[in-house]
Length: 222
Image 1: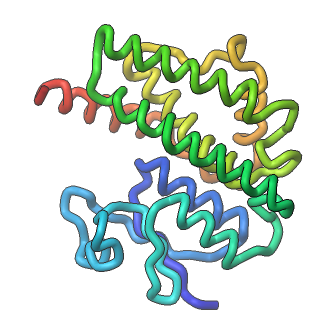
Image 2 (image 1 turned 90 degrees about the vertical axis):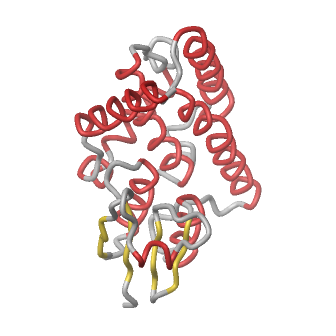
């Protein structure tokens, strides 16, 4: 098998997206830990445009951006489990919700790192509205966004929901409460119990320390 390497850091939810997809597909890979304060020559070579992680290198061919990598993994290793629906319309819906998650949730969580007071309150309100949209229109009655089986939408949202919960702990808000979003809460519990996800879930304490320190640095420099 052609060599597969994943360049990243384990404090990135985007890197975990790729880890989960590779593990679900049973694709062996080598993890190359990067120091983002001193980026390696290889990282700068493989992602010369954005100079960011994650980067998947397959046979010396780099693929960048987490969701692009996930689609590459699905197309390169189409064996079970399939992470995208077979029906073209259902695939289009999956891509719609992935874009929704990327456009909405990622942007809001970026704000959480360096805002307080009214700005934080406004961002939290917007996040609640986004979650309500996913509760009512995205998941529906399904166990997963892909129906009965985990798919790319679940991986994309699962990484962000974990990140969101840790952010909430740091800033003192609880946007994801089970009584407000019962379907999403049940979905996330099912997601976390998938053996591959459970075995390769991020360390919450390490994320908390990292986000808290980063937030303090941003607020101090404001």
